[in-house]
Image 1 (cartoon, helix red, strand yellow):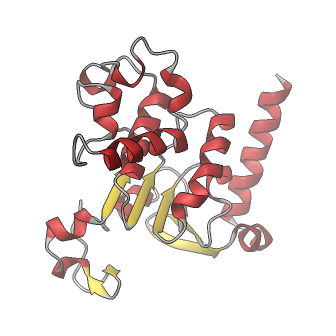
Image 2 (cartoon, helix red, strand yellow):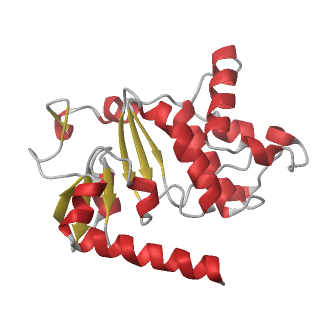
Length: 220
């Protein structure tokens, strides 16, 4: 499922209702038929992993940040972290870091670029192997080429699990099974990429605007 819409339309707020970062009204948000308000908070959040737009990294190594919350020192954890870094394409940056995945990133990941921090956060979420994966504009600071690589690899990760993606980029969401278009806190359009383009509404306008911006960028 993808959520798109103008800034301030409520995408991140809606996403935050699933792990109860904000409490929804009773009887409004369900997972597998269960009202999220009736589920123990620890149980609910144990099946959800979130990769936010502005991730928090600890003053530790890259590897430790990716493995955060996993059982330390096990072969399965090492393998899961390595696979997750490959999927998020963080692995291709490790060769440029002084100590590879053992490089310490400083408070809040200050030594990493915005795109690297987002990819470390995405790798952490993938490594957790959640039932529900929430990506809140998690690739906004990643260049278009790397984003395409990551999306290609995420296809396998999303098989068999619920994934909700928030993004301003149409290219990020166009392969989603269902896209909801929000405006001023309401769902104003829903459908697949092709169905929404055919509507000629808000989604189609956002798509056309982004195509024009891309063409101007390539021409400059």
